[in-house]
Amino acid sequence: MSRVPKIIIISGASGSGKTTLVNYLLSCKELNLTFSVSACTRKKRASEIDGQNYIFLSIEEFNKKINQNEFVEWEEVYKDHFYGTLKNATMQILKDGKNLLFDVDIQGAYTIKKYFKSQAIGIFIKAPSIDIAKKRLIKRQTESKKALQFRVDKIEEEIEMGKKMDHQLLNDDLDKSKSEIYGLIHRFIVS
Image (cartoon, rainbow, N blue to C red; front, side, top):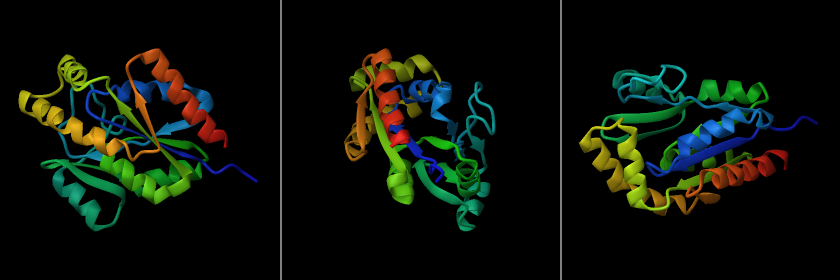
């Protein structure tokens, strides 16, 4: 009997360091992880590559895909900033026998978990404090002041919602966090 591919859902408040941990997990070849590239309507950052970091769509294109039921999940995370997971790409990765790694907002995490049930594990990443999360966001220099404040204002709400995930991981020591998240995922994959 062949092993059923697993779904790994990583979520976290802005500035939690989840992208750093996701990149670490993707470097662990023995986990057989493939990154789920989300579609979004926000502007592409200079360092991002269309189709690799995100699939960048216009609001019109995104709405067309919603109407055609092409998403596993989608959310309007911020005003006119839609994010979603396309069904066709997701199912093809699973059909190929790969474990699928999602890096999504908390609402998307709930929806994906509900869709895949016990085939999925949800891990919420937390920064040591809101102040540290804010400093991390400022250091990134990828947000306007308005967007930065909006993200900071949502952190408490995201942390509260993250308590409903399967696991919460405090990212206060990167090496320790890498070890903890690896252990959680490895145990889940081999179970």
